[in-house]
Image (tube, rainbow, N blue to C red; front, side, top):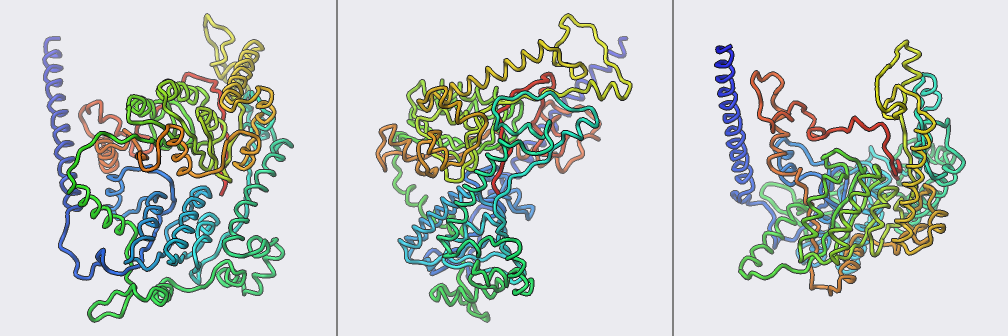
Length: 633
């Protein structure tokens, strides 16, 4: 026994030593990585052929796979991706807009090239915002902006339609396919294997749970989706027609008409797009740059022993060049002053869910600290909630509403809502905080309804000859999936669903200053476009995030030029340490290390960065949701 105690004592000393070694190693590695990245960022010997601020040039905007309105990954993580010769999947609309604003006033910029070679998706709302800025750029500067793409998706074609001309690669196509809402239905499959769950809902249009008990869309859901398809496509096609001067048959002909037209084009997609005037020219990227040189003759780059080239600067480099100049000028003033009155933008993006710290989800834990920090900041006079969410957990949504009521509303901070592509179900519940609500024309919103799903394995277990037996002082408890729901349990759940729906409608009626019955008529889980939502009173106005910021400042009594806008993403999960640990976890096979790890490193057993910090509540069998599984492509 004494020897065992001695052995345990020395093992504890050894474990402590290992923890110290691992900790010191992580710190040293962090410092080395920081110094290495700082060295990369430090000024290097200038390339004699590099363009300067004074050179006449064309700025090339090259968005990555998806254009979003805020960061999903940190700047440091983007640098790590670059070091591994990988591209971030995201580009940010504010950077593109800032480029257009600066370039419009820059006499050394001849024009803009929008290169969509890497991009495949941008929401129609964000495309509208950038498109509006493109229009302003063209009118104020009298400069041209031209677009190239190896192939156009429907969403980035919508964005490109705002520019002066569109060029398509000979091997490419223009994918204009309209709008479709569809779903898979599992009733027969679930019944075949005795896995059909208990479904509870309030709202005849609340269709998220229909796949569990129907073989096809209900009449109510079909009616709702047909209206959405019609209204959304009307907006998309109307904008393209206005920008490009096309008619319906040139944008989306019937399948029979398209076959005839394709046959005339030799079944060549690029030739078809040119024939339909969807694009202005078909050529390779090199030929496109040669044409651009003719269009922008001042933007010439001459190098020894080389042909004359287009003087082109990537928009990220251009912004860096301009920001360096601005920082130098501001540093020279050397003045310190009190914080400016601030309008703070908070981004709520993704499904609303509990027990998750992942950046792609909205949860109370992810936002609580940020909300309290903003609430305690006296310089923040107004808050804009930018919502892109289909909803999710009602409990989490209510917790967030209560927290923001305490920290913002009860402290006199004005709240304005900016709804993005979707602010439905729980996403609309967050919107009820707003003193004023903006939506985009194609926003999917509303869906005021709730549902609950209770899984059951009783019949499946019986079929397999498996029987569950228990001793409990709470018989009939519905948390056990191997028991049938008793009648009292069903009534209890139905009561919870009805009560939650009534609470939701009450929140909306108070927020929108409407009668309960009036809200109930437009609720019932029905989804609406932004245009429709304005007509029925669920939103106040159609507008952009910038419009929402200006409104928030106005409600707070702030005049233009007398406040600043803070749209930085305050996310503790994007810290240097967390990102570093993620990258270590991918490189090392930690499972095979034969000594105990410190608690903070045990999380590294998985190599999936998206799931490193996730956990699940396994005790609850019933969760009540307000969720809308739609996305307009």
